[in-house]
Image 1 (tube, rainbow, N blue to C red):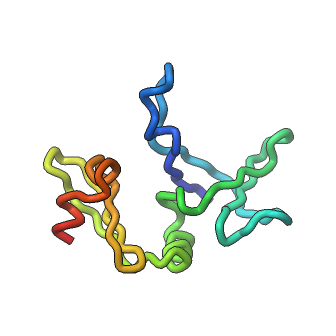
Image 2: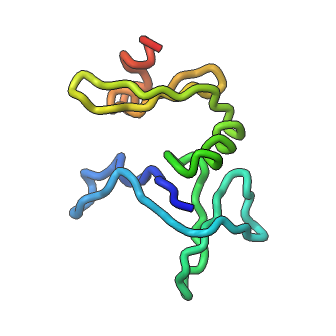
Image 3: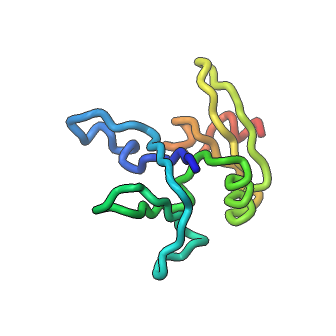
Length: 120
């Protein structure tokens, strides 16, 4: 399984002396851990001896295999996804969760509102 995960440090990337990527990409086999809530967190094997399992918050997952994404959407109440093109050509994703729209554009990140959400 391959997944794309939003990097939470990206929002404060100006605080670091080295480049911070917006997304991290992980690959492994899904597994479970005894004391980890499998509905909230995804556990992936890493293949490393000293670090055998990676625990990922499911709310930070941007993309995964289509079947897994559908299961996550159902769990988090996502009813619709749309791709929109921004004014400068960038592509953003609109997501409707529990009747409320969110957007991946910078305007929505700062103001929690944007023209893409208003248009939807």
